[in-house]
Image 1: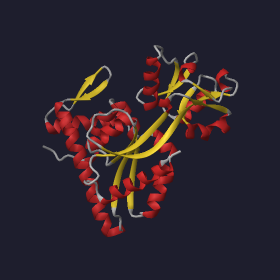
Image 2 (image 1 turned 90 degrees about the vertical axis):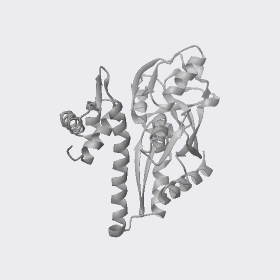
Image 3 (image 1 turned 135 degrees about the horizontal axis):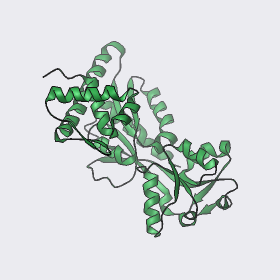
Image 4 (image 1 turned 30 degrees about the vertical axis):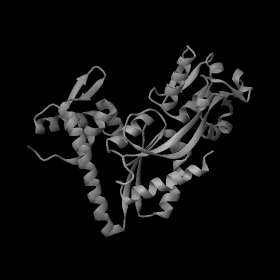
Length: 300
């Protein structure tokens, strides 16, 4: 069997995570044919099919699932070798792999990671954005040390710690019928077109549940993948949107948007930190969790 190389393992992991070779290629900024060749070479080297092609993309075979776990562990150990050796050359004292949802990244993490790194300049933080269900999955599967997510049922045996609370609001163009009141219920918004986030986002899932409870549906005129794009589409008059208050405030003046509070109890959302085991975290990970959980005292 030929020697396995880390790049091929990394690309295989990305293909499984993204679900298609094309999406993995876009994420890694290389051509799809190069990834396909790497995966084919892996399969030839190991003598077993790793991916099953479907009309929706690709999914791992049983052997592929086994390799996925092994590859993640191997790459993490390789990262640890680099970090440990770098201590002798640069004084680096730890690496913390963090996955977080977009709400925490946009609203809270930039300033909080900055203050953490200022206090611990020799610790490295690797941050990746994922939707909340994938945040808990990544931590449970050891592809991340620390996760930050909007509280949703997940079923994993994780330890969690308080973080922040955010509040969802409605944004509308200034001349929209809903732009006048200071507070409305979600039910009052269902008569209007929506600009929504992608289907797996915590906000989109919450809106779908809330609409189902009303026996109605959210009329999604268009879906986007970021808060910035959502605000731009709302400003263009394509519908209303729902997003965290702090994010809406960042865009409201620039795009001439109106912000309306939601009266529903579920509009106040809890963000939490999760780990597999605090006691088992490396020292750098413990320091980061402690630092972030202390920020919970400053909840809005």
